[in-house]
Structure formats: structure tokens, C-alpha cells
Image 1 (cartoon, rainbow over the protein chains, first blue to last red):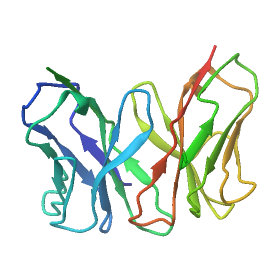
Image 2: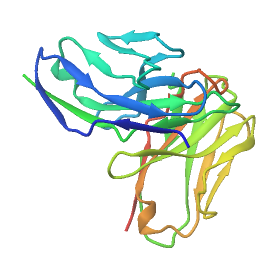
Image 3: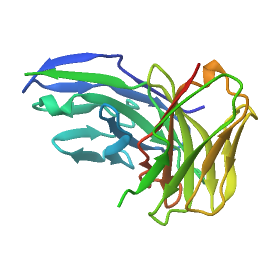
Image 4: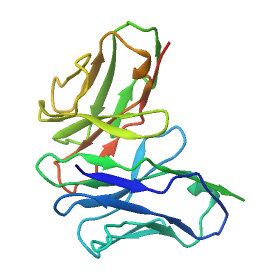
Amino acid sequence: GDSVTQMEGPVTLSEEAFLTINCTYTATGYPSLFWYVQYPGEGLQLLLKATKADDKGSNKGFEATYRKETTSFHLEKGSVQVSDSAVYFCALSDRSGYSTLTFGKGTMLLVSP
Amino acid sequence: DTAVSQTPKYLVTQMGNDKSIKCEQNLGHDTMYWYKQDSKKFLKIMFSYNNKELIINETVPNRFSPKSPDKAHLNLHINSLELGDSAVYFCASNPRGGDNEQFFGPGTRLTVL
């Protein structure tokens, strides 16, 4: 079945540092890929998405590129802020009929001033 | 103006009790979901409904019974609660499967004592 693997956290960075959170996936067919963010005590919000190979999703300074050849969708940000502290989830949707999201285990990001 | 709402936000109860969690979306979406997030933040799909019909049931114990009185509501009833049911339960919706973003509710933290 489909699966998503992302790096374990917590990832601890100082403000303005460069962020990479790795995500790889296994899926049949051509899934859509997502990054969701969960701030403390809140539900999940879509951060960005990409629906086909070589697409780049971007939002709020975060970027991720759909790499079919390496089955990856790594999340990057050039300069993190304290307000970026949250749990980040990589997910895929298999697009077959009424598709659901398959999530990675989440990566906690802690940014200190 | 809340898009996806859940009640209650917190639920503390004894083992063996029966409880319900309610979910409503005002986005006009056709498809609704229940996800379970365990203590390690892992998210897993439980159910999916489309226009009040059950589409996906991911090997959830039959103590869990979703009910959709109309396409804007998907409630979750749990019988004979067990310690292992303690988790955060998220409701979500989207217009259809495929690439569309899923919109999540704020979650219901269930604690079984």
C-alpha cells in the first residue's frame, strides 16, 4: 500500500536558519503530494501541494518540489522564524476515486530566537 | 465563519462509556472524513463519507459507528470506550477526492480513564 516516510524530529533551529525536512513516498500510480502544518493545539492546515512531477508548491516562504525519479517531496525554507514552530506532515493522495490522505509520522520543528 | 467545526474540543470519560463527537462543515463539500491522531502524532484515516454514504472504513473496530444525517454533518459514536481509544480525532472535508485540499477541524481530544 501507499506510505510516506519523513525524517524524525524534533528539528531544532535558530531563527533565520535554513530548513529542510525530508519526505519520501511509495505509491502506485501518480499521487498528489502535500505538506500540512499543525500549530500547537490546532488542527491541520494545508501548507503547499504539488500534483505532478516537477511541480513546485510554495507558500509562506516554504517550498517543495515533486521529484518522481527519487519519489521525494522535501520541504525547504530559507530563513525560519519562531512562528514556524509546529509539526509538519508530508502526505499523499492517490487520486483513485474517493481518495484519502496517507500521512507521514510528522516532524516537529522548534525554532529558537 | 468556521469552515469545519467539531464538538466537543475535549472529552474525558471512563472506560466502558459511550460517547459521540460531532462534526459540521459549512463549505458545501461532498466528502467528509474522520482521522485519528495518536499520542505520537501519527494520523490515520478511519472513515470517509460521500453524500451521506460510507465510502471507506479502514478496519476500525465496530465499536466506532459514524453517522451522516446530511452531507454537512459526520458524527462519530464510540461504544464501550477503551483506554486505547484515547487520541485526538480530526474531522475533515473536501469537495471530492483527488487533488482537492482537505479542510480539517480543530480536533477533539478524547481521554479515556
